[in-house]
Image (cartoon, rainbow, N blue to C red; front, side, top):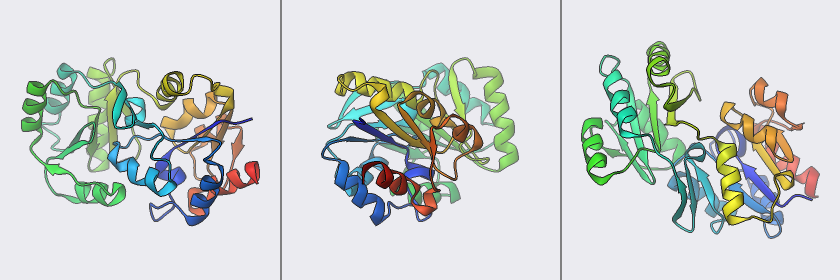
Length: 268
């Protein structure tokens, strides 16, 4: 009865080594000829394509930046960015904090310097940042009319917390703020989320598929709407309690191949 599977990546599909286990690859390969396999993440597209390749689903669309960018066959189906006034204010508010701000547009990733945060993101996503000052990127993108799909703030937890509350107080009406970790803030355009991105992808690419025919797997706050509103929402064992509360099923953790275990029960 299911025709599409939406898979969150970090904390869900990937194990503790930030890799897809062989068991997971095998079960997905066994069902991918009859079920659409869609990766849906806060990552940039090129940090998702190598995983699509490992799963042999490169021909499938993907949902990047928590729904801010939907890509199919290297072409954008939908693109929503942070507007320039908000972008400008985000940089200005960081003047006193000096937090790491990575800037993303499509497959472009600019980091202000090679530091602990850049190195960790490169390692986790198997992508490479271009090192360039935030102000220079702002001027470049303004000339090119490129809106950032995501701004990733990283730094010491207390400073990140203060910066979060400052942004929320002044810009909460125009940007979406998501604390994926205590040391992270993922900043995206207002109104973007994984569920809206998934709905848009289905409407444009697979209009014959109903949301009741979709399975979604996730673990964190940005997965809640998606897990709650598809036909079968599944939380991995390491998911936060809010995700588990709205899920239809709870499987094992990502470290214990929860996605593979659940798919095997459903389809084998």
